[in-house]
Length: 428
Image 1 (cartoon, rainbow, N blue to C red):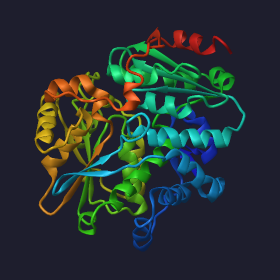
Image 2: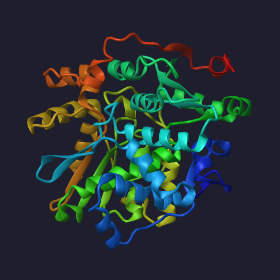
Image 3: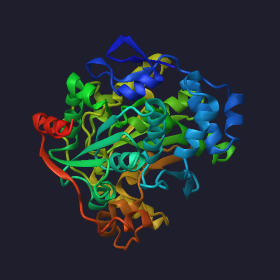
């Protein structure tokens, strides 16, 4: 598999190099040189397969012969050890529930697959994972890499801007997992990660790698659950499918669009954001004008400069698709609350991110279409806000209950690269 740097097309690397390097020169994202496509017959046959076998075939189409088929399938089986069920919400709407993994969020798929790929590729060579999180990435990455030999993980997150239970899930592990609360928003955390990757000495000394959605292994893993969703739908729903994706850093939408590029039958996608609406405004007005990030109920989407957007544009360019065909919506907190209550009245308990996606979907769905919205996190991860909005008590799943009373082990730092660098290098 060859990938090229979106900022310098002359920089072309293997899959293994892209996984271990994370970013290219000038902080460029890697993108597949070849865009494989399955025939309609192949897609129909794949939709009959089990999740792991199908996912191995999808990933093999991108990775090629860099990883033997049997090894890749074994790694996929280890990573995807939990389901991704579609829950029926209305006659014409379902929710793809991606929160049945160990950290109750969709990022378990990408985080665990990346851990499998990195340990396969790196062997005994020491690696430092540096990543920023707006909530769920941190937990998924921490649990995916926890206890692995020769892997140090440093996770930056915005202090006071993620839910208490999100924080407990990954800031109580210790061991090879180091968590750092940054005085700033997610974009400040992400900027620090980018600065670190521009520091050659830091990169070489620590064997630096990122587990953000910018890493190609995470992105490819996420393609697989779109196929798994369609496999669960009746044939008539597959022919008129609209998928609404709650979007922050836009990795999930990118993966969905790559699934469509492979041949998955999706009529259209909707990019659903909260009031951090850089992309909806861009699609409406044609100008890229990020504003200051605002804190919202759907905090994992509090991103005003989404990292994966260049990949979306590149895919549309390569496939000669029209960006104006991409649906979009921006949903404010009051509408999110009302939508959560609306879903509760339908018998479905949702958290804010899924509610944003449902609202965007419900408002755009046409007669005869079938809508799917992504449930990216378990409602109990946002226990305080969900209980306050719905007026009901949520029981904690065991994954959260066993961590709820543990002490936080985080360090606190200013949003200052010199301070972060010193922290990273202190034992080098």
